[in-house]
Image (cartoon, rainbow, N blue to C red; front, side):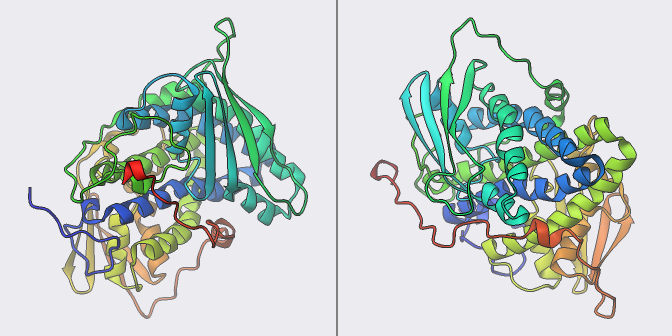
Length: 432
């Protein structure tokens, strides 16, 4: 196999054959974090629509449904990919490190294994808590809704993917007063006695488990850069960084994190359909992606060095688009001529995965939101026209009125995601 020229950025010319293998380990690790963070952008852009119709109780129900249904599935997937075995707290802590619900640096988690059946984890920083404090003026009711009502059930659903008798008990957690320092929260992990009643899975877990997405397998390719771990079979490492892993592992992990987000979205859409009906889901789904796309595009552009707002920038951002996970969804993106970009969705698993609703369903639209929202977030004068079937043409009309951003965009993209003074952690000598 011919080795590629790799870079931490995608700042060169658009390449129709560009792939994740073109990024270095540093670039892949950065992209992994950005894709993990989409799980947070997703909830920020979806939950307000449900809350406006059903109140805060509906928000809690949606969060419980989506995370309890999806997280056990993608936890098992990540463990299998990385060789994480066992049923003790060390395996629980390892799986948390690869949970899209804990994006690295956004939720800065540390942990400790005391013994097989006892351990702790704590959040040195928590962007989710910071965001709710910022958005609500530190409203204790809203903070409690997130840090108690949602986490009490969703955490334990995730734990049960490793051990059905695993339990998570708060040592301390928000709400907190206006100014505070130290840990945002601390939790005790334990494996309970054999006679403890095992709680049932969320009923939607079986429905999501039957999807092609839940069962899709990513192959492990050949590394284009030396160094890094090939798996996570050793001891739990508190403060593990994605940069510690090998090139091929990180290529697969970007794809896996995008698929994990897709499973979360699929579980959320199923919940809305069941609780509020198909008509409401259809309206909410389009707005959800439209509100999510601008901050997603901004962050991906900054992370990957994609500059400008022309068709070349749109093409590169569509190649990076985690809303259509690589391999599960297959696209060709290329120029028909200097002024026309053509995007075609090829036969793939995503197109056959319609048993439960998801953003993929919008590929049937004349202007598919999972594609058009990315293009419009790059340039609000972009125009998307269907050519035939699942093929579209994208142009930019400089004389057109710009399409306004979704009203929720500023709220979804507000507040700093990562601490400005966060320094890269030193790589343990054993991992260099």
